[in-house]
Length: 302
Figure 1 (cartoon, helix red, strand yellow):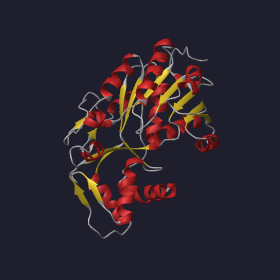
Figure 2: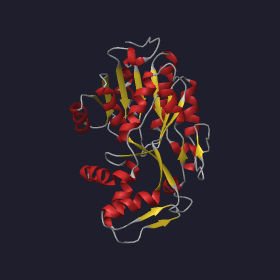
Figure 3: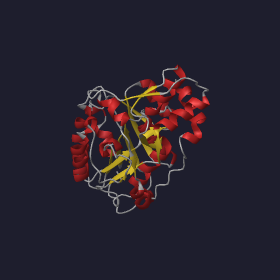
């Protein structure tokens, strides 16, 4: 296994990548981005059906649950690059279980690249101010990520913080499309808040660059946000495209609805560090300018 890299990984040959969560919107885009660049990519997915889809993209499927460590531990041990792109909202013990294994690997193999997927919600409500990686003021829904990030970076892993992902199956922006197209255009927040957005493919390039810049990126944290855009403006653009004439409503969610409150915060996130250090250059423009394309992509997935 080529785990004794002494410099930029982009110079290595026949590198093996293992992506946990390879069928999710982030993990799938990341796995494909590495595959396109000639890496041998393995992807953990839960079902044989999803495994077939991975194989169609020349990603070698590993079938199993993330909790079932013995299904994938040997693949992770042999990989030069391991990406944790899980989003298990059914079992909150998954993250810590996987973290224990990956931190152990990072310590055992210091030249193995480990990338943990966090998110910009750890930066909290920025109240209209543009913030960098150091502005750690997590909302309640992601309080545990502070300790998680620290554990990973202390072990030499890379922490990446994607903005709210759009494109492909739409991720969180799917609620905008479904809400307007169904005529139930009611959304959490004041309507004056902004989201920090990133296209799935731009995001994936950030992962490749972070891995290829190792060991420069070792133990570092990077925000990956393409644009900061007003939620109301984005939804109004969808309404205009769909010729929706109804009222677009914004409702402040109850305090005990942590997910709705996460969607309601105002964020303006700076990615200068990733652009400068990694050479990350997102190529997708404003969400608003390409609503038709993103709506039709979401529709094709549903």
